[in-house]
Amino acid sequence: MTLHRYRSHRCDELRKSDVGQTIRLSGWVHRVRDHGGVLFIDLRDHFGITQVVADPDSPAFSLAETVRSEWVIRVDGDVKARSDETVNANLPTGEIEVFAREIEILSKADELPLPVFGEPDYPEDTRLKYRFLDLRRETLHHNIMMRTRIIAEMRKLMNDAGFTEFSTPILTASSPEGARDFLVPSRLHHGKFYALPQAPQQYKQLVMMSGFDKYFQIAPCFRDEDPRADRLPGEFYQLDLEMSFVEQDDVLGAMEPVVRDVFKAFAGKKPVTEAFPRIAYDEAIRKYGTDKPDLRNPIVMEDVSEHFRGSGFKVFAGILDKSEKNQVWAIPAKTGGSRAFCDRMNSWAQGEGQPGLGYIFWREEDGAEEARVQGAGPIAKNIGEERTEAIRTQLGLEAGDACFFAAGDPAQFHKFAGDARTRAGEELDLVDRERFELAWIVDFPFYEWDEDNKKIEFSHNPFSMPQGGREALEKAQEEGDAALLELKAYQYDLVCNGFEIASGGIRNHLPQTMVKAFEIAGLDKETVEREFGGLYRAFHYGAPPHGGMAAGVDRIVMLLLGAKNLREITMFPMNQQAQDLLLGAPGEVSAAQLRDLNIRVNPKARDA
Image 1 (cartoon, helix red, strand yellow):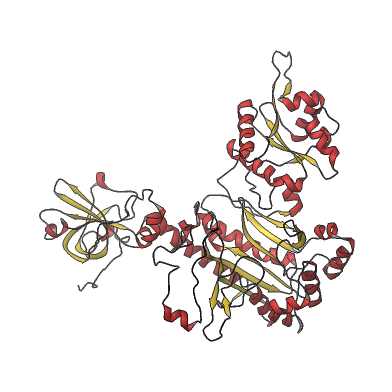
Image 2 (cartoon, rainbow, N blue to C red; image 1 turned 180 degrees about the vertical axis):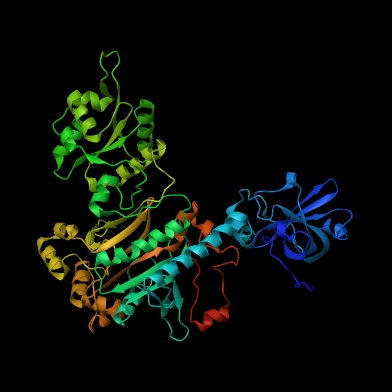
């Protein structure tokens, strides 16, 4: 039998039924073990590992003694059954081994800058500089393959749902909205620049203007912003989509089964939310302190202002008297009823720049003939037994539980309260980490107040439709800033386990309404025509009502794989300083290249 030049089988294929065959394998030397003069070579390829054996009787023994980790070799040999005591149940090929008859060294490896076998922690810069070695390691290799399968499943589900995949341009125009652009100088048009798209927002709306009904793509997006654990510097990918002749319910109804089925396909044994709840933005802030709540945490905050109004706890009573906007929120903490835990939470709050974190905890009353639950702590002492009991009853707490408080203007303290909710849930191990909890956040504010510039600005997406349309915009404008800040938009986010994984909206497809929305945010009609000319013109020639969303591919993959950092699910990421250590980007270019572009690089200004 004539064998293929490099392999007759992959390193995951051989089984007990292949015993007696002469085969050929090629791959990397995963590790070499010397057991009393018998050499065992774990040979690895993309698919798996096969154990190769060479003893002194093997014609390949002398060459086998020379091989080292990560050398690439070809092995010809006979498939033999392992003895019962040497079977490796952890390997698909664990019932067999290959007795080496011939070994060919296809390429050698220098001393490794980081190990491939065993996957110990290693400095990130080394891992990124030698990413091709890092990617050989089992966990990262598996993660990248799972990423491709997740994306393939997304594509399948979108096609099954009637969406058509279109590609939109990578070189486009700079946009004044959103994050900082990556700019690309034009050689043909002196002094002008392209921009890499932050998202295909305008193009996908123009696809709807062009008469196509349902669009999607796995879109690369580019933003020149600082990295963090759940956002890579430079580029990321999103499942981008748009639909014509739809309302908000249509978009959510179309995408919920797609996202749910992607999670179910790769969640393993972890339960996935069947019907995603829809939570209004104001309700999410009120209950969880954030618009991306982790619903695995059972803590729900409540307004307990009435129990403190006119009470003996003068700090909170005074705050409530100071302004009608002010409130006192309770953060109930089941099982947190010990002074030690409450003191730890108070110390944490001080570390967050707060004066402290008020609390009450409940315990069984000492020496009582009948079991009675009694509140403890300075606040309980100040407000008295009746009010303390009313708080416990409202929150459904028992002996052994605690409650923390935040007071003031909720617009100022809700984030801290949400952080305290998260902290308490994690410290008390209340969070069920073995599930995926998904929910829609809807009814976002259309505008928000820019405190630095003392003006109204868009809260979410400037291309979204305000609820009530142009009439609502004009009415709110007449009534003043307070009414504008109350105006809601047809905007929605999808959240999972405390992460925003998708965002979208029903678009503002009427040119007059678009101009009015931008005027309120301080951009006049001429600016809209100049900055969004293509989209604005298209709206004058028959624009269908349309809407869509974009889901973060990287973030979804990270959640499904349980990774802590996006670099663990990305093939060639940059480091924290936005540098590609493997290929050396960003790098200097030649003077000739700069001349072609009519660009001169000025010396870096010294810090003052």
